[in-house]
Image 1 (tube, rainbow, N blue to C red):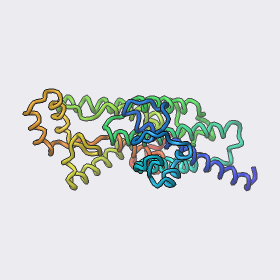
Image 2 (image 1 turned 60 degrees about the vertical axis):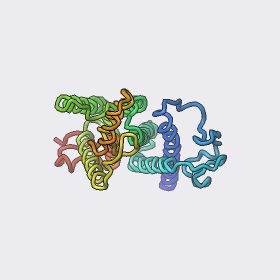
Image 3 (image 1 turned 90 degrees about the horizontal axis):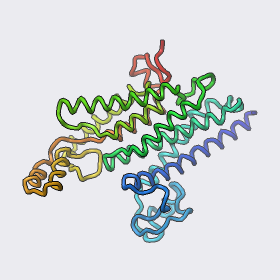
Image 4 (image 1 turned 180 degrees about the vertical axis):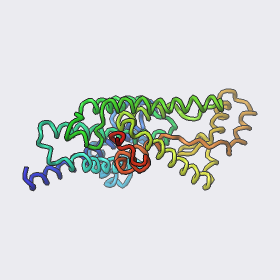
Length: 334
């Protein structure tokens, strides 16, 4: 393939990957809204949540339609959340960067037997992982729940992609291509660590310190990124979570209650609120009023999501640094 044809083909790849990711981001908005509300993601077609009017195909173009409509429903003129175009745009950026990471460095090998299609499998798996991680982080942010019906199928896709891609040259050194055994170990170890943490915390405090959804999310992350990613994932997510919690406390966010959306919720308030609904006692209601400065509860999912996205694009640089040069995305350096 000569230089002109190579440049044209690469440009087409960039456009395809960016648009595909934007469309997947649009679908993820449906998932973010419907799955926590236990609604089908397949039916009915998308509609305005305010007036119920069906959204026309030409009003469902990622990012562009929201801008053309100026962020309002064509039918009722009620505002449409800016979350929709933001998610679509971020996913489009994921597609562009992943194309740059997977296809461009290997453009000279694309004519090898089956190379393009195998790299396409790697791209599709990678973009599903990135978009899924973003969606799960947003869902956990909004509901403090991580739906296993999203995380576990994605974990299965991660293991399948690892099985499908060869571990020989030139695939062995392609970032994102991990061995199938590393994928399975990553899923089991990632989920297992969370189980151990939850169990140990409960034995010491008699309280549940983490949600079970974190188990499913770590299973998904480990399946796509391998066990090698876990030191970075745990370190980066924990550090960023502590920093965010510290900022929240400094800004007075400790006053939030369990009913409110956001990263920071009052853990004690949430527990006493359950007693109010369950017993309907004045004592429990009074306790709820007095508990607004109780323990701060921070959902872990958004920080796991952020760390996973960071690792996909920066892991090959950051992992050797935090491991003192002993570990890379492909394993230990002997």
